[in-house]
Length: 232
Image: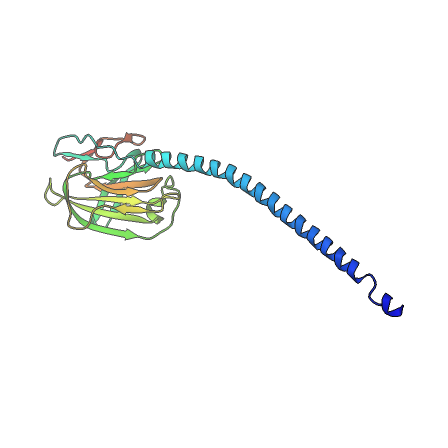
């Protein structure tokens, strides 16, 4: 009798354990299935939104990176705008890196809505090309011309012997990449494509003090089309 009672209940407890653990397993599988269904529904819904955002981004990029052919005006005395945008500075500065001294400066602000391909203001030879690391201040800030990352393109004119024109490409808070398409020694024609600045930025033109400025602060200009300066 003692031996008959020694292991009493173990079988039922084992059966109970099987029942309990299989029930726990069923709950886990059910929870995983419900979670997978929820995640699947969420991913499916989110993927639709993400694809929609990607389509909008793609359309914006196609529009932003547009590159219309300029209607280049004739006239050897004309110096054209190197960029699309709004003139916000016209002054005199010292530019010793390429121009070699005092010169006039026209600074053009490019918003994200402007064409960001830069054009040659005159025909000539690329004589200087230098990238300078720096900050990424908002390009609307005039100090950005002095402190931001930039590339200076030096153009020796093929239209007037001895003439040097400087084009400074300046990065902004959004524009983090300047892509020159020319190299030292390249010959360029008036209105030819020089570079690309991705997103908002600033471009400056340096030219001799004696030349006549044909725009004013606030003027909207088009790269390779608008006459900024006339040689005298």
